[in-house]
Amino acid sequence: MYLPKHFLVEDPVLLGQLISEYPLATIVANLDGHFEINHLPLMLSVDGTKLYGHIAKMNPLTKVASSSNTSVTAIFHGPNAYVTPSWYPSKQETGKVVPTWNYATVHAEGFIKLIDDPQWLRSHVSQMTDIHEPTYQSTWKLDDAPEEYVQTMLKAIIGIEIEVKSLIGKFKLSQNRPAEDYDAVVAQLEKSPQEVLQEMLGYMRRPK
Image 1 (spheres, rainbow, N blue to C red):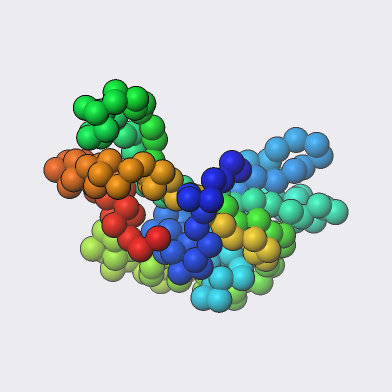
Image 2: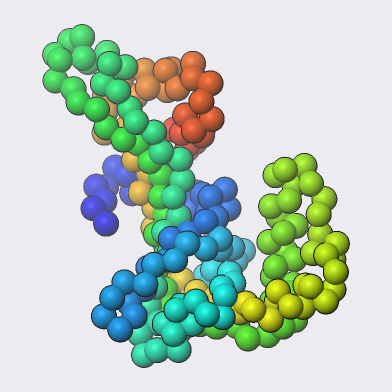
């Protein structure tokens, strides 16, 4: 990943926050000489050393986890937004401005393994449900579904653990612009009713 120093984020708290807010990861692995790419929600352990999730037993990632090369990269995509140069005060001064795209992303590199433990799997799925259901003001629990059905569904999946060896973020949030341009972008985002732009605003306001 191309990563200029002014976009580099290594603070584990900030990286963990993005993973928590945007848990759907793009997982890239090498399987028999080609890229195996999957999109899966993952959970980061409290100490930031492990990522946990689950996959269908038919998913080719099971082959990756059983191969001699278990290395994977999990990419978490935070907010992103087009930034028009018309917002920059420097446009009026020099005209030497171009559009750009702001975004925040986290790359986690590590090694994947399978967790073939029915008790762990049920607890994991239940925990993920409990975390995300309140987003929709819902109180649905795994136990609300018929037990026989739950068991059938659980038998079709298997747990995964990614031992994190490297966790790094790229938060491209106009830090490379003059202060007046940065402030102008923030001011314009504050006026927008679009949710995606409000998410970007939230990241631009966070401590760097």
